[in-house]
Length: 119
Image (cartoon, rainbow, N blue to C red; front, top):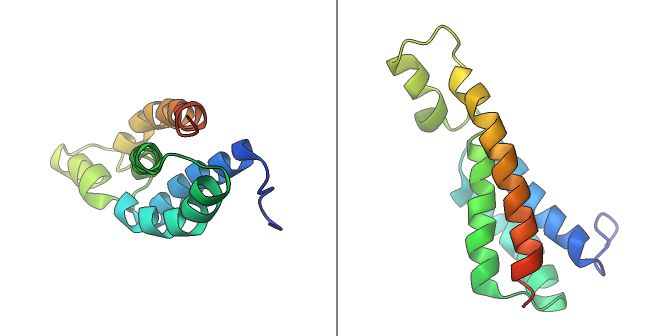
């Protein structure tokens, strides 16, 4: 409650979605971020306090986490190996090309999460 205004649906959705992206970028995989953020923010705040639909929240939450995968070299098999196989001069060229898609997908997912999970 000190970090997130728990009475605000929007603040909880933003904390959940942006937390998924950040934690996925650090870990390199959304499968690691999903249970941690869902147990910490999704279940108690979004589902328990605000009545979010668990299925919709889970699906959109996991997809939101993959935005972090597009933004990090920690996802080596997805971002670094293709650069090596294609012998690109820029090791992070694949990531640079994915940033606009990741940010657009993040914005759409956050909007969908806010609009759809509370119905």
